[in-house]
Length: 141
Image (cartoon, rainbow, N blue to C red; front, side, top):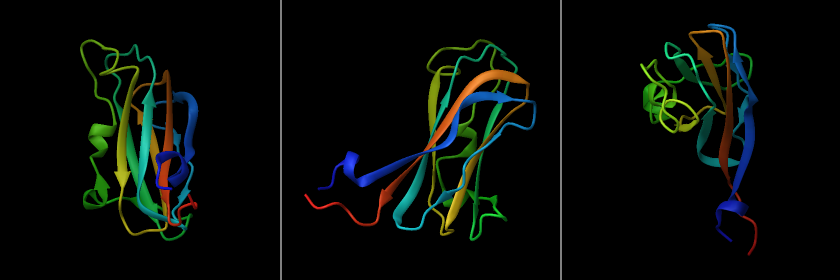
């Protein structure tokens, strides 16, 4: 059966948490692509942001081993890291610049990938990210 529920695995990459200290941010769980096909979709949720000067940056990393992940080349991303983040704005609008979901995909050839999110201000803004992968073998219908 080829349906969303049976064909895809969702993992928590970053558990819902305050983004934290300026420049440190949150490091996502390393996602192992073994046994899965196609890209990894990172689904990012940003909560209520009050600081209009805050910028949130998403960075996707990759590697053949878990200890040496490096930034992914733009050609191996679906979407852009800039579009997956949030910029500073004069006013925060729900659904656009706060309380909003963003996404970015990784389509490179490395076994492991990860998403990290940083902020330019120390913020209590809640963030979360999930990784979605498609199983290489599908369950019988």
